[in-house]
Length: 131
Image 1 (cartoon, rainbow, N blue to C red):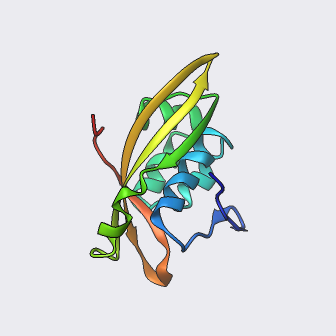
Image 2: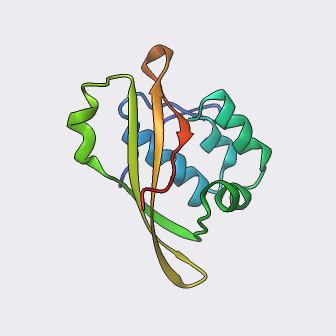
């Protein structure tokens, strides 16, 4: 899944869709191992929590209970049409398929995003596991 990102300082600038922001967040955390970059697409409260843990491994363990050495992340795009009714809020389901210590692991997570000033999407909540 290609993520069209451009960096401004250490922050990601994505205004296109909440799906891209969600994928970029987990890609920064799990594949790039970059906590600051992941926190840059979160609201203030969640950003502070993520930065509190300092390492991507700690964030992954404490907030998501998932560990990956490498992972592919795919958003569920079936809700895109529904989201148009709620233009400034989105709940995104993400599918994870990756490796940790040579074991293949799959998982599903849901997050909530809101659109803030300038049309920028930010993650504001980690939702309970869908399953």
